[in-house]
Amino acid sequence: RTRGSIIDAGVPEERVSVVIGDLTEEEVRIKIVESTVARWGHLDVLVNNAGASITYGKPGFEASDDAYMETMNINLRSVIQLVRLARPHLIRSKGEIVNVSSIAALNFGITHDPYYAISKAGLDQLTRGLAVDLIGYGVRVNGVSPGIVETSFMVNNGLTKEQSEKVCAAFFRERYLLAKRLTQSGP
Image 1 (cartoon, rainbow, N blue to C red):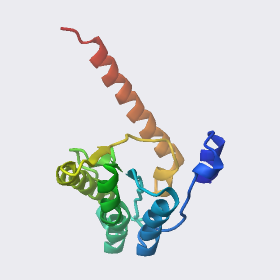
Image 2 (image 1 turned 180 degrees about the horizontal axis):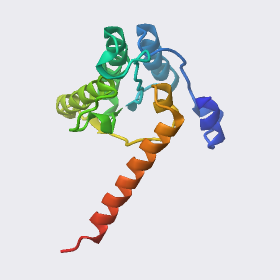
Image 3 (image 1 turned 120 degrees about the vertical axis):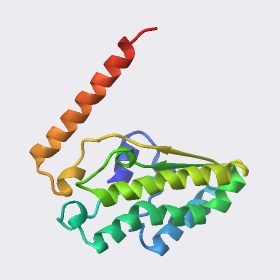
Image 4 (image 1 turned 60 degrees about the vertical axis):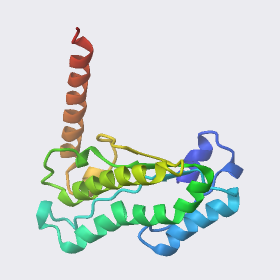
């Protein structure tokens, strides 16, 4: 699906390389880095964009320890391990790392999905540490924290379609009001 979307967007097929697999599996992470270097001869950018909220249908802290571990494995542990694998290649190319976090990591309590928020807060701290560690080698590390994106993510994690739509509408309304206040406030 992703490959097709990239090609549909105008990228020539010979410029598209896809590895399909579960990032919690070591052999998949190794394949991602090794196949990239084998095909292109170098690695310039690592974008860690995996994200999951595993709850097994239980809200908040009722979710099991297994749900916690699986969420942490996808959202944080896989990133740490991909960075370890990519690090020497990125140092050689003076490359970049972009970690995709979430506004869920910000300074407010997330009661309906705390494990996701914890994992993304950990990712933010990892990003800061990597930035300090790798800048001496010429590798830049940045993080982005998107807001709510209208996908099936919330419905897949237990909200009804109507609840998901209300959450999105509230988020977009608040973002609009903040932008309006910021642009109308003068010196």
